[in-house]
Image 1 (tube, rainbow, N blue to C red):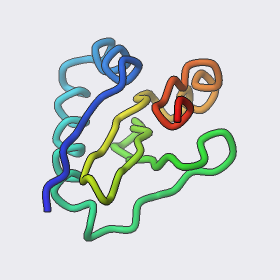
Image 2: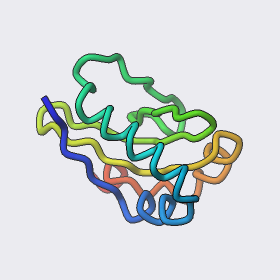
Image 3: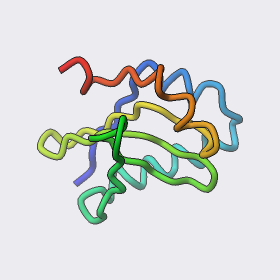
Length: 99
């Protein structure tokens, strides 16, 4: 089943700052994830990112949550692997914090 994909404001801001070729690769992988999430075991994160999953696209990372009942993937943060976990401490801004 295909999942609906949503972006948080931070996710949209992050993707808007990336090069077009990188964005294309990331979008293709997110589309693949939306079609195949029920067929894979997502990579669950720990610590301050507990409850989030990561999607790996080369050197880039997408941090997301998934509502398996409603079939919604929410993209929270995108970035280069060397920076994403350092910078995100103060920018998380996810829906799960508000609930």
